[in-house]
Length: 459
Image 1 (cartoon, rainbow, N blue to C red):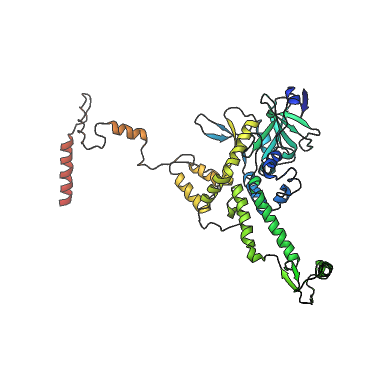
Image 2 (tube, helix red, strand yellow):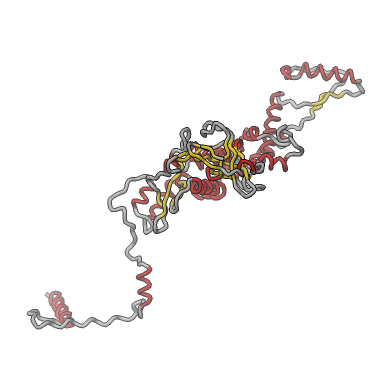
């Protein structure tokens, strides 16, 4: 089977068309565990759908916070030198897709879309567009995860069935091999090709938070008056009970809230809704926020919930946030780009962490001041501050009393490494036969100098 994608002809083996097994989607996997019966997910009987869950502020805050923090990091194309040092590459045919991924997104929008698809649906699929002549990747498109299904053949081949996507240049559905799609996924709990998003772990908490807010809104719509029952001291027939119920709802329900009620025959109104203070409404709502943040690995203070740490060490807090939440996402993007762009050996992509792990000005100046004393040059330190190089700032400085390890090794290998024995004085050079200068003995010269000094003191 042959087909053209972006002007390139791709030949797929027939097993991809006829022998592909049915895909296992996330909804299938989640439904087996979370649905009390078939169709409960679609009927919204177990938990709210994803659209409703995203309306919960904690879920939106976690997704947007992670996506925004990572997308602001600049993508760098780097190469490694003979010393094992990675440095940024200026010009390269691979740089075009990293600088401007596609015609309608810049790098920030591209990475934000990538991470939103991964955090919400558990899987991010990026379609590669190649140059017709050299086959180098020249553009990248983030696909709608709901329109992509992984396919697995009996012999282990992986393909992706993609529905029509006009933004990605696919007016019709197509099935592509894994070499044409970058697949970044969350932890795969049940199937290697199906990542499970954090929403799976916090869906019930987000649903509970939504329903708490919905009940609160209904409560205040009723002018903060809870529902209740009308009770009479004696027995009443069904006809009278129905009439009282209808009259009460007509006169004091809906737009008639707040009107004065006059009840006779010892009728009493008994509220049955638990008041907010008894239901610990705020504590329950705070717990749902904490549970959502725990599933995403985001510190509470990052989503403006919970106390802000009193520590003045901003770098330590950012480092904790990086290692506990962002690092695995960042390194996964870097590795997916390295493999998906098919970079040659010695090349790799890096996200510039300077945009994230920034210290406060005082700590940064103190760090750079210590670093220029033997670790980096003054120009390298100035570059960290976005300052131009200065003349003479390219050399690494060190204090005079510092010795190299080679010099210390030679000293320790000598017979007297610490210089306890005084070396014998060097013999005076013998005069040459053709020299007219008089050779003076050293001891005699010292006596003459001392005699002259003594004479000057007496004078």
